[in-house]
Image 1 (tube, one colour):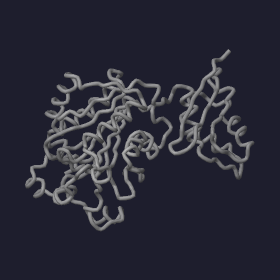
Image 2: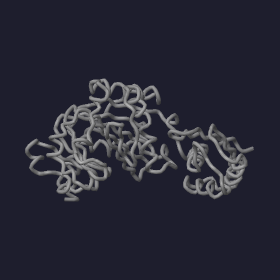
Image 3: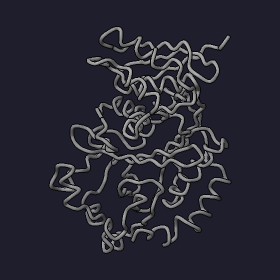
Image 4: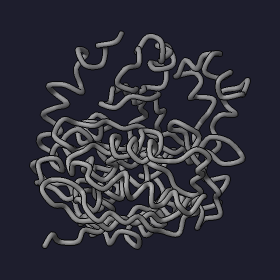
Length: 353
């Protein structure tokens, strides 16, 4: 008799979807979808179950979602969930997708390091998680040198004002993920990186994966009286304005890094003298002044940066049972080696001049 499999997925801002099933001869059997969602008409649930029964167990999440969508009769309405949510629950039942509770989590407290070393560690720790040599990990950054970290596909010439960079002694480095430039001085930002298996976001769109991976930090901000939300694709904002942005990079080894920088007490006057923030970008954000795009966490929370970091760490630990960890000597040594061979070189920094 085939063993019974069970998978659950909680839609971000929505309802719980549960799938119970078995597998026989490589196909799904006895599929039963349930949850606290709403669905009209009632008969549509049987249509979904029937569509999933008999499908190959190795179908992708996208193919499973397509099968559910194709099964829906005209006029069927899904409230609080989606075909994508059902597919993720199926993949979790089959252990091809994972949830937060399926992993043992580590957390690394802020450690003051050169910015280039921080960037190199993002690549190294993602590789370590993919190779199974490190648990999925949350790492908070810290640094002393004034820096700009540009996205993987940004042009140095287009993004930076050379005079401002020189005047303020800015260290410029390029990270492995896409997205925009990060202006960072000691104590003016909160930056963290998540190193995770891609199974955690299996079936999620890129847009949904951002919100999913940062649900814990939005909860932490809420505990401080800050009502934050995502503006697609990767901006974190409040009613008072943007407070941060996220970026991701997925490696071929099955792991990925998701990192976020939020402004705490940023020097907007200096930022606009270092970064070239063009009219096109400002118009897209609906503002005429670059200075208005940065709304510090200090003003909205009234808390010291260290207190915000502690609140964020405590929220992550409470949710996922993370245990304290540290950077290994081998990881730090490799990071410094890669600064010399890659992240600190003009060949890498100026690959898009």
